[in-house]
Image 1 (cartoon, rainbow, N blue to C red):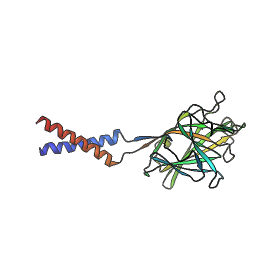
Image 2: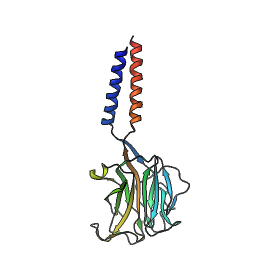
Image 3: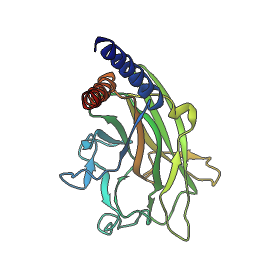
Image 4: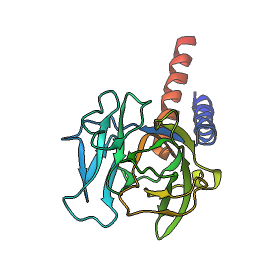
Length: 238
């Protein structure tokens, strides 16, 4: 019996190790379906998004200024009016920046995470639309930071639409404390002549795919569960 227990414990240790190697990441999607106290987001607002939080600001804005909204894609007429041209191919809730808004994203448990991919779109304003636009994503890890640009698609048949954008490997492989999404609008189709702070920089985000490393305690619980199953099988065969 003692030898069996030693063997089982060794097997559990190997199982935990293999789980840590084979399943080094746990994936979570930020989908903005969490119920909010209202659709509008103002400069400095801190909101919950399931296992994540968002904190929103606007370039050149002050407290109380409108800089974003949680938009129901199936019924967005009330918000996407007065010159706003929102993406048309998403029937779920998404986050839209307004008036040069930008947004930070982090985990509620303060665990570091990787940013893998997301759905994003330009939100057009008025009749003078940007020739091109992009989101500068900046990841923070302690005192260090790294940034990358993700290019947004232009009009298709007169409409903006969400597209899936995958972060490059050098960025997606880093674990961050939090990340920031900041938009730029460009006067040229080749993503040159780009600025922000001109009230033309608006974008939409949804289905942000992230990855975290499971806590060691999670591996241990899984292993102990397997040990219990092994013991039960042993008793059933005696």
